[in-house]
Length: 100
Image (cartoon, rainbow, N blue to C red; front, side, top):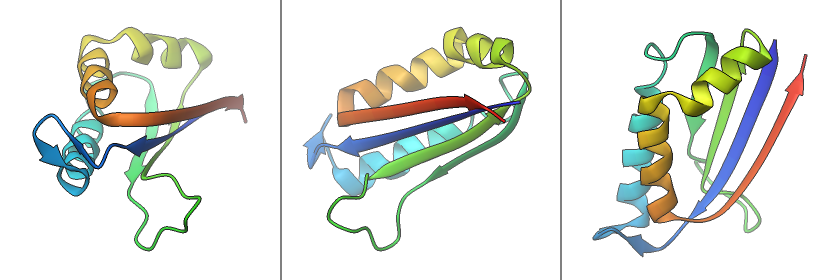
């Protein structure tokens, strides 16, 4: 199994919407990938309820059956579309992948 964790900060305004709207839009888009991409065990996009100053705006915790499943997810057309959306509204991104 491989774990894939991604964290983003979002712009206060982007693509004609405020941060809160964009966060919900991206969270829902990520949730939509749960049953579309094979090999996903867990996919959990969360928006902190009471973030600290140093917190990220949105965190994705996900688990995949194998490194190959994560690679397939990365190039899946539905994931690529969501990544394109995120690219338009984010200001920072951090990622870590590790085998468990």
